[in-house]
Image (tube, rainbow, N blue to C red; front, top):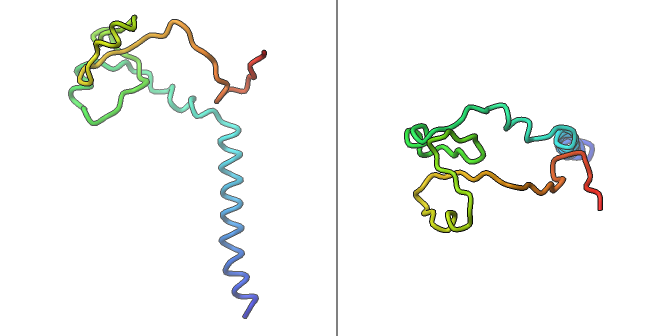
Length: 103
């Protein structure tokens, strides 16, 4: 009887450990940002207005979406406006990349 109980507990435990190991190896090996960059169709204001429940954060904007370039413009934006911002400088965090930052 103890062998049956041990088998009932061991099989799910081993399955969970193997699943966690597989997930760890998958996310360690593949860059999740690669999956996001395939959909590169620019988004227009009309598309956003047609589908207001969809999040378009991180998508390429078309020319009809206003761009903000200064802190003053950013502070004047209300929550109901659609805008985009183009960064002047990016700071690499090394979160997803294989490269390490050198001091």
